[in-house]
Image (cartoon, rainbow, N blue to C red):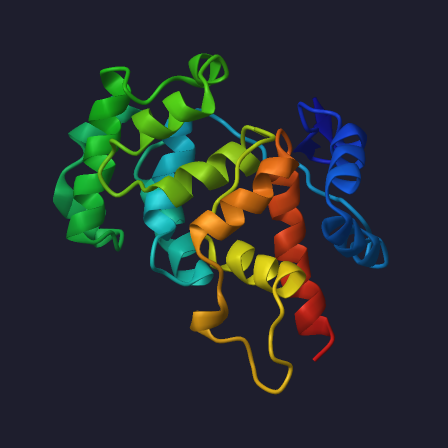
Length: 229
């Protein structure tokens, strides 16, 4: 369902918020603070086939937004309707992709993505909806250049899976530290202050099956800290 240009979540956000408040008082306190800046506003990005989402993710890796957007636009322009399909991408000479600004490593990644889409490893949109989170992670990370973090972002913001906890994400780690750890107020947050994955996963057990929602609040904890400076 589309709402204000974005798709609604496939789970009940009010049920998720009630669960998190009941299970974790400290998280509930953070949620109360977020209410002052608008509350829970996660909506899903519009999404097409996983092929398109991952193509965009590969092109955006390690680039600033404006430069990545320019290259993405150039790549789409190589295809008459701006809608590349896997076979068309495989058939595109590397020289054309280089001329659009795509690096050699990313060209290899794009071609691997196209090949794995054609052989069914990367599923169609209809097929991916029927797969478990673990199956999606296993399949998509088999593509060159696609790591767990990229798939986790797709699961949260494109597919609306409710129980994803990206423990390697800097913002989630920082938000967790700000919310749950005793940090010295005399200096800025340092890398050594960030929590280890096992610490985060232990606390997050109580958040299931809505760890994606809790993750969203970890990012908001970072926003609140920045606003208070």
